[in-house]
Image (cartoon, helix red, strand yellow):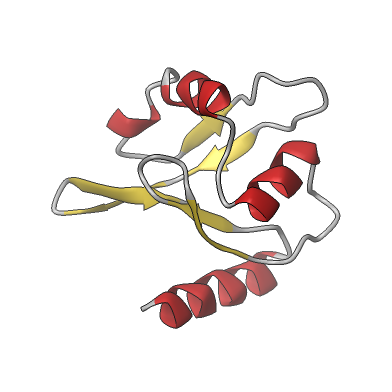
Length: 99
């Protein structure tokens, strides 16, 4: 499955010409695509560590993304961090992760 997920991320990133990542519901990185010049230090750290700092994770989850049913913007509360488009990935209502 990991290869299939990586293929999806790779294809979507190429089509969008944007960095793409998929995280699990706890914001642990599952798959990521190379950068297109749109990365910031938080994204680079996430890719290298395959997760984000627990405090930052709490701040992101506090924005209510686990309840979202539609795409929205996530504000990363760190200097120099860019907002992210966050798309919840759901199947029959169950949260599987975030794009």
